[in-house]
Length: 501
Image (cartoon, rainbow, N blue to C red; front, side):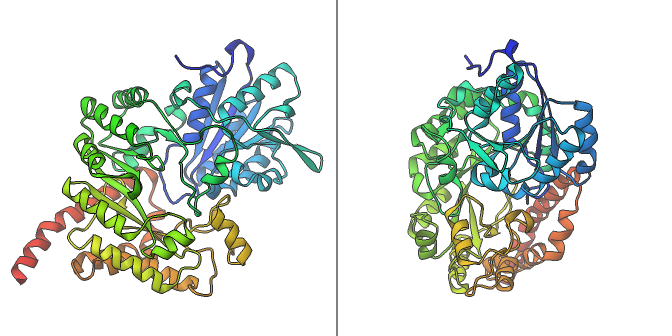
């Protein structure tokens, strides 16, 4: 039985919700926040319309779509790289009808609350989970009551503000309705992601890595922060999606899919009984053991995304607070190889306090891990993954970069994960860029020189700039072409190596 957060007969206001990935590195995404809110509103009988901004021309279309919807409340669920849109969308809404409140929620609203409320046309900021809080706000609005007492919200009051107490996190995720999959064209998103559907079965993460905003988000509520759907509910969600959409791979994008070992084992057992679609997960080496890897593999897990982040134990543990050693990584990846699971290794360059010598350790460890296999993943693309460090608001490292005077521009105004927004004396931006562009070439050049050269071309800034201009509908075909090219190259290159010997 789903828990209803409002009585349908009590709330008749019309709501319009924006979401965006215009400034994300990822061209095709499903907006989880708006999907969750829309489902809750519709369950309560509220009329809700949504608009997901995924291409520049959507900004020109937005005013007319908003005018036709004629809502009583406008909201924007926002991550930090999309924060530059807040004032534009708020101003657009106020030009249409100044009296209609403009609300901002999402991760950026939680971790950078005061920056958001300073935006001239923003009326209120949701500073925690939104489902219960938004319904309370709408009930008060409909009844003509004072909305400024709504928990989990910050409201402007003249030159000051009213910050209300926080609500506890929703303890039972099964009590919430399934996300509204109609808030964007999900099949188009799947197709653009090479047939991959991206899903989340949890909220929160038990760890407090210093590059992540989890600690600040955790402080925004009370109660248990890291929560999973029940196994039965997770299977029901997958069953419904299998009936409604066509996909060839499930990517479970939970921050750490295996943090609850018992749950992960239960998921693997249930999935194996009901589905044959392969899947991939995100994990940490300190949550994996042989039994868990074996059972995940038996259920269809083909890849596990692991954050090495830095090959330097010092950077990874003293700077990032990951509490993992290189020896742990080698042990887990050897176990994965035994059961046919491919490790997708994620690396970061340009971390605070990192030096070129530290980064070289990252290169060397990846050389060892990729000595026998070139990895090009349907879910994750070219591997090993390499990102330029982006300091996100709400993280310890963001605050440290600000204190050190290294941060030159906010994440939303740089090419997220591709260009450094830091100026550090020990690792200047031009050296970071060079390390980023040549990383996969260096990893593969000794064992796979031809494909290393292909990666050198693929990672060049000119080529990546061209990829950025590819229309959303064509992205899936381009990714499939790259994957096919890598796959077809393997037997040719094997024959060439045998002939050389």
